Image (cartoon, rainbow, N blue to C red; front, side, top):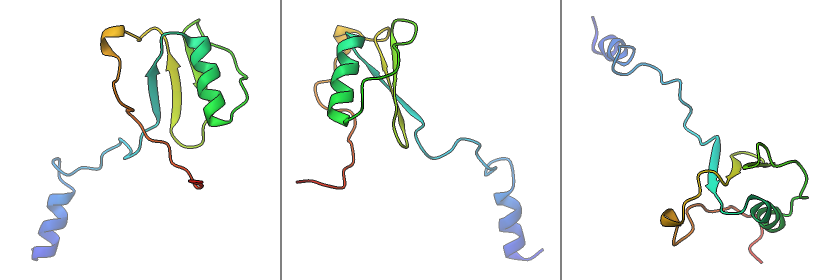
Length: 95
């Protein structure tokens, strides 16, 4: 067996098998204390109409392109409040 064939055999083995998990983030859950106010605030800063319903009294899915955002009031806890932003939004216009 040539060296190249051995490498290919190793890469196809159990240690280097193809991973079914994509290298991207599908949804980010953001804990919020007030789901209604959070929906208004996030939709306002993102320029999205405040449509859609709050599901099950504690979830709101913000319609996004790419990675989704879900506001979730059931997982909110005052002792776990972020002191700085935990995500960054990209923009095409910085003016």
